[in-house]
Length: 202
Image 1 (tube, helix red, strand yellow):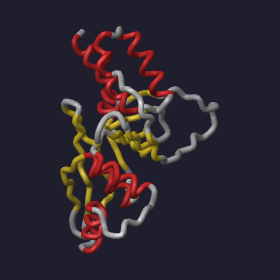
Image 2 (cartoon, one colour):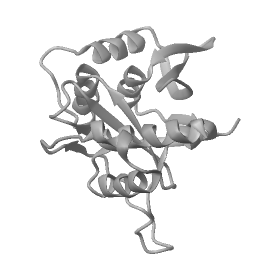
Image 3 (tube, one colour):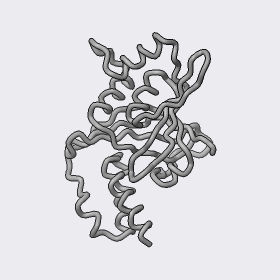
Image 4 (cartoon, helix red, strand yellow):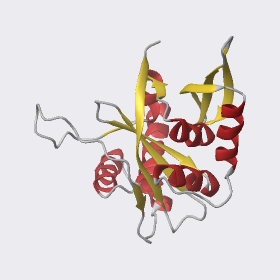
């Protein structure tokens, strides 16, 4: 199965949902986005590495990197390899001088390590197909898209998730486009899941 490379395009925090964050991965040279809900600790670990901040004492993921470096273990890539009931599953592809192994990992931890090691993040077409969101191409054709890693903080506003079940598919698609324009990925995930759940029932 062909691997698709992803990069971190945003890390968003919704103040209205306690401990609710989304790391948004974008398809390299593509228009699809893969939002993944993560916990506050993992969001902090990713943000610290993205912003190249130096905590006074090593965080857990820094400790893990130091441990791996001390024993000459290299992290080559991470693979987001499965999606079951809304949960993403990942593997760390690590190697020593003599061996290469795949280690099961939570996706948020895998991404936090990928940022620290500067290694690529991959997934597969079936995962992007079922959980990805297609962004409109607003760039001029032929121009190379700029890639920018940024940390976004969401506004304090009601999520409105409780109203989704009363809306038509057409209304949900319209709202999905609106929240994508404002980069409210937390709400976009809820709307996407509602649309997918209705499509499965057909």
